[in-house]
Length: 312
Image (cartoon, rainbow, N blue to C red; front, side, top):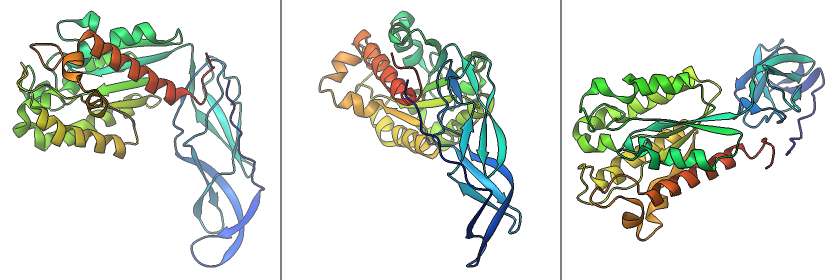
């Protein structure tokens, strides 16, 4: 198992500057977390990973919060199922930090027919993903054929039918996942004239709703792959490339999400249209394409979790 060197503890008082050029001895009387750690869900026997965690101390005299890197973690080694927190300690102050510890991670795949598998659900990328993950992970498929971020395009072309209004959305939350793999946007490109003004706003609403409902989960956002020219579903590849994909990248960056850019990865393969997109369809994944996506998702998840999971 990989271990993290935890920061040293500050002394009860320290010298630095608050609210101006003068310096004084800080007397701290409170502590809080100002940024969450990248991971808040762990498998049993893992070690707590403080990466991304930001802790601040309150100076009694100058009434300001001072961010400190000098904190330590109590109870963060060899985590056990049922453990609900670790303790953060700095300058003699302590605060509990909520986590959860499970026997396995749940991966929820969120998306449209590229996730569901269209007419071939047993040949979907989540199906293949479930066959290659190790026994400490499980996979749920919450894709819906014909669905979109805005409701425009796809099966219904109706804003009331956006993904967030569907049962699959509710089911994905009820699954209580630890990792969300999100790929939505291809169907919106079908009616981009109507969807364009809502796409970014609705995508942000969707991600924010997941963050609120699943505060322990971490998200891998996939940039939608290209489509073939003259495809059977009238999804213009130029619209995906020039409008949808850049917005997906922007949203992922703004939310500080892990990203898997399928546009770039597909285009790195010279014959991706014949290898990865079904003949006469031009949108949905072949078996080889689904296996490729599954493998890249699994590799991305392994990279995301490499700092604290038990090594296989």
